[in-house]
Structures are given as structure tokens and as C-alpha cells.
Image (tube, rainbow, N blue to C red):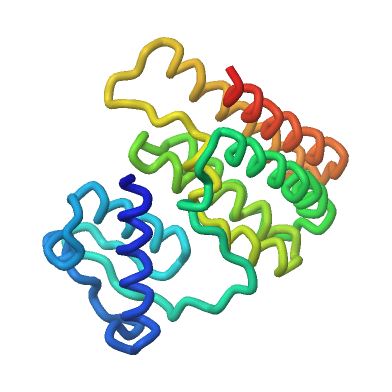
Length: 225
């Protein structure tokens, strides 16, 4: 339910940006203003800003608020999270990612340059250090960095169209208190990302493809358990 409410806030802010009411450099309405305008909770307002930040549309500065960075570009493909309604849909999303991201990892390894290498290293470090509240965004940023490293803009366009929801849907939401199994899950997922990054940074396309397949295949198995 909260995801659908966040969709409404995100769409509303994007409409304001496209209409010129919020130009690049303008300050985003405060969390309290978003709550009042859209009739949502603070949690939903924060989720909406997080998603806009992950899309590269806004930037947040501690103590100053969030500011518009760019006008959202039109995309030929979009998938709203509200369209994912069943467990079968979630599994289909992972299968879709398997078909796309395994090859993206191989291409990233084959075409890696200094900028791509640095972006993947930084995204991996950010994922390892991420607080649970920012884990989805950090996870998406890593996969986006891999897509960007392919040098093929269509991979990046597709990832941006999916957005963090492609991570948010299958991921188990952990509470404030971690159980041993939660900690083990986080460690296992981090290790899978480490293996993907290591293969790409070594420019080993076959191993990168296999590492991504292991990660997404493991994600699918965890969903079915």
C-alpha cells in the first residue's frame, strides 16, 4: 500500500518539475509539506524522495533539504511497482533481470574503463556500508553502475526505467533488530555482489556473467523458500 502512495508522490513531484514549477536548483517541498499536500505519512514521503534521488532527479544535503537536479527524461519503457501484484509477478521480474543483467555484467567486464571501474568500486563500498533504510537504494546503485559500465545506453535506460523497485520488490525488508538469519542474509548478498564486482574489475566477462547469474538465481531461490 505504501508503495502505491509513494508512486503518487513521485508522479506529483515529477509533474511539477516537468511543468517548470520546480526548476533545476529549486528546493523540494519539505517532508512536512509533502505529508500535508499528498496526505501521506512521513515514511511514504521519505520513500518518494529516496526514489527521486535514486533516479538522479534530486540531491539531498543534510540540514538543507533536497534540491532538483534535472528534468526527468521521457522513457520508452516504464513499469510501475503497482503492476507487480503477485508472487508470480515478482519471480517473473527476477527472471527478466536474469535475461538482461547477466549479459550486462559480461559487457561491463569487456568494456570496462577507468570511470566505470571507479563507479563500481564506489557503489560496492556504499552497499557494504549502507544502513538498512538505504539498502535498497544502494543495491540499485550497484546494479546501475554495472549497467553504465557496459557503455551501452540502452542498458542504462532500462535500469533507470525500472528504478529501485526492481530491488525493493524481491528484497526481504528487515526490521530495526537483526536476527542471526538476517545478518547471514545480508552477508551472503554482499558476498554475491563482491563476486560480481571482482569479476568485472578483472575484466573477466565469462566469470562476471556467471557471478551475476548466481546472484540473481540465489535471489529467486530465496523468494521461493
